[in-house]
Length: 143
Image (cartoon, rainbow, N blue to C red):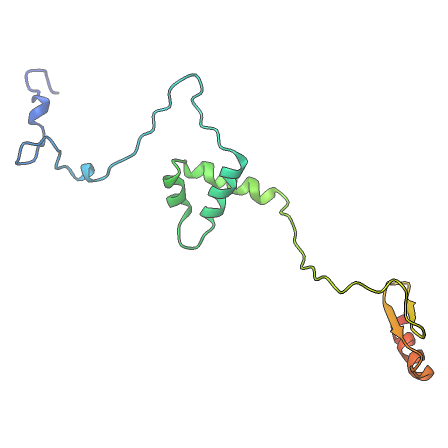
């Protein structure tokens, strides 16, 4: 047991040879950032956009979730909770849309358009062979 008489003054504990007061202990090389939050509100508030951005960053291949958490001052558990929450949300689905040229309001003379019950459309002009048209319609009716 150490008594006060055995104690070494703080200034003499593990200092560099130049007397600068910097410790030479191995743990001194690891600097940790500490954020002090004062006031009545002790929790940080993250907007939905900020959370999305941090979660998206954590999914990148050039970094790790723990590195992202450290960069933003988060606990990794908090980051993984956000990742689970965003995974449960339905993501917006996008479909490719191509605009076609506007169809003329009135079909030219001799053009026939046939719309099948399933929505398939066949357009033919007066030059179509009747036998060929029957074959095409038969194929479209088959399930």
